[in-house]
Amino acid sequence: MSQAILDWSVLIAQVMLGVGMLATLYRMVVGPRAQDRILALDALYVVGLLLLVTVGIRTGSQIYFELAMLMGLLGFVGTVALAKFLFRGEVIE
Image (cartoon, rainbow, N blue to C red; front, side, top):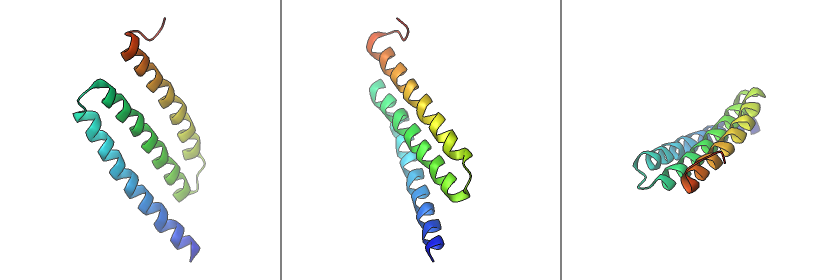
C-alpha cells in the first residue's frame, strides 16, 4: 500500500515539475528583459534538478542524486556569471 502511494506521489510530482518546466521555458523565450530570462533559466535548472531527484527516487539509483548535486553547483555558478555579466558587462575582472 505505501509503495503504491509513493509511486503515485512521485508520478504526480514529475507531472507538476514538467508543467513548471514548460512555464519557465515560456518565460525564458518570451521574457521582456534579459533579467527575466536569466531568472527563468535559474528556475529551469532548479526544476530540472528536482526532476532528476524524483527520477532517482523512482528508480532507486544513486547516480541521479549525484547528477542533481553537480547540476545544482554548475547552475548556481552559471547564474552568478550571467548576472555579473549583465550588471558589469564582463565576467572576469
